[in-house]
Length: 357
Image 1 (cartoon, rainbow, N blue to C red):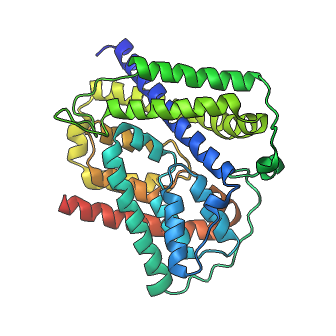
Image 2 (image 1 turned 60 degrees about the vertical axis):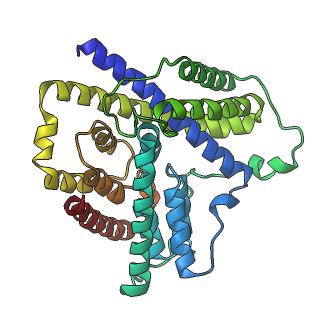
Image 3 (image 1 turned 45 degrees about the vertical axis):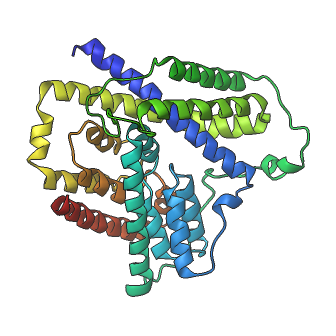
């Protein structure tokens, strides 16, 4: 494979992944606004209910549910065990990428992380010593923000709509993405790609996933066309496109190009296969980084069949995208304790799975 092929394959895959990530983020943003934030604020009265709810918030792809959980913890509405359950269950924006590249296996991994998160939360709150963390009050961070226009949206029968350049770009971008999916321009050929079944019917194959996201994109195209100016520009554009598209595309393209060149020069698979315990440790330590992006390398390596599942699962357990950034900003002690627990759990689960699988 020459340089042009590596760059073209990386570009095609990056556009496909970034588009799917953005469409899912837009749908979650729409759900949050249409429910006036209630979708992420409902809380059970029991401690176990707090753990389960917080873990489910973390299970939602992306960081929105994670921000909600941190906010609930900061106001003393959920326990420290519930907070840790969320951090273990969430994989940040990488969840979108995994669901795009290997949806079947991504679902199994996310279910495992959810179960581990709930179990860890129960151990902390019911069996472990009292943590004794005081309720925090986090400053508004802009995420999951409901504006005055949103609060009065359901009473506004004639929302303002204008054909701005942001709406035009958003509409054109979604339309072009739908056309690319429908024409097959973004299909890629990876032998033995994770989640692909060449024998028989597979609802989660690449073709069916492309059709599904083309349909979801049509829905978001309608939202881009008929949504209010505030929702389109203040939420879809500012909260999703401007904030996430450059980062997701840059990290995805960079990782894929780097991996393409490295695998052409070095026998990476043989080296990693002889150093799996070291890779589990590395994946866990990199998971400490409270940012989406660096963890994509493990997603990509797993999709290419270079690393086994225990390495990716260890990274998914220890990392939380940037869901913990508000916590780090206001309580470094809580952040350090939570991350330390996550790393210990990640190493335990990673090495257990390495022995079992």
